[in-house]
Length: 272
Length: 282
Image (tube, rainbow over all chains, first blue to last red):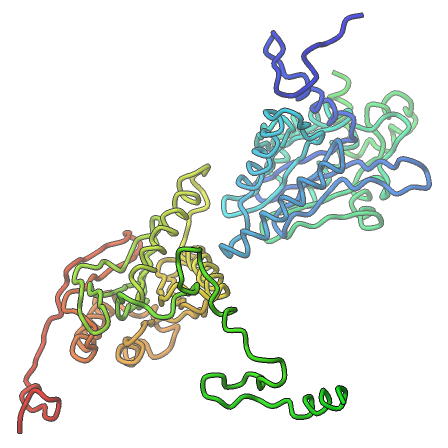
């Protein structure tokens, strides 16, 4: 049977110029549950869909605070994310201690990008199996970055990683202008949850148990909302189930939602 | 018999009052002090014990700093003294760090040169390398960094023997002026001076700015005038000071160095009346 000879380590190129181990690491992100990030001009929101391994077990944490002005959302191997976020926390503390200033978001994210890149170029090491969305607010404003195990870092207005994240990306693309013009953090969180909702599979809905929300921005320290604290945000949604699935099987509710403009718009878009 | 002796030793465990071993236990408590412990060597060839800085060697005297409404002014002369000998007359003790910060250093000149190298490395890593143009290295950051460097060296019992004034702009673009010394002690004020200047110049500077917040009413000319007056008084009364100095102005137009400024308006009329310092015979 055919076997790939070029994926035993991350330092050997395939004849077509690919690094398979690095590509597998990128696949690991897609195994994790979805995380969505979006930025207005003043604030950045991260939302995540938490998974629990079994009914009686706890949910895996999706959002990690780095400092008062910065936090990350993860998708993929949670232990790798812990290592990276501990490193980021160390960098943030160092910046406060040595320079009396908060770590700039771009510096922070490039520092872990450098760590990840080294792993793609040294024999015997494994690339990190986790993707991060890094949100932060500094001298230069609100920033959202996506970090990948390949060492690449890109800045976004809206980004999503993890399982079925394409659906969230589609939502963000369609609502980009509304998101960029959000006046209040509340609107931004609702857009985030709407995007996250689109990644849900048919039998799942957003609950206060499986949803994490965080916000950071101008005059707003990095804050996460978990468990009961999330309910206030879920209450602002017109529905906690995926809109595409809703369209398929609950026509009788159409009358109830007719007044809600957002939903009508959603329908028009999905009907196209 | 043995037990009795050890008990009596404890009871009589007294301090050694010999001036050269003052404060140590008496020899009859733990035995004679092993002098070779203090003879630790740097290496086999070097018979001297390891020693840290005990005193500055070549020194620079006072640095003065003052805030005014648009920025700060700093001044320091160009003398490097070897004890009471004015050994060098071309030492530039105020340096620019980054684009809008100045650091003035008094005390040991070789430690100042070490600080110059440390600060150049800082500028390379923070201003030049891997930087998207944001995150400028401003005065409060340079100040915090220097505080860490000096406090760290003091904790190694090997201080950098300097007093430093950092001047520039704060994060909110208001004038910034703070002091650091060899112990890592730091404080800020609208008027600052190191060394002899803290006795002679501070009262004159405070005459212009009696209350810390009042700097915002001070014009550049007035601040400059009082700094020049202070440099004159220091030249009169501080025997380690020089006639030429560097005057640095930091304001929204940038950093301006005026070199080889001379102490003006000197009057030595009083000198002929001085009596009793050995030069004049009665």
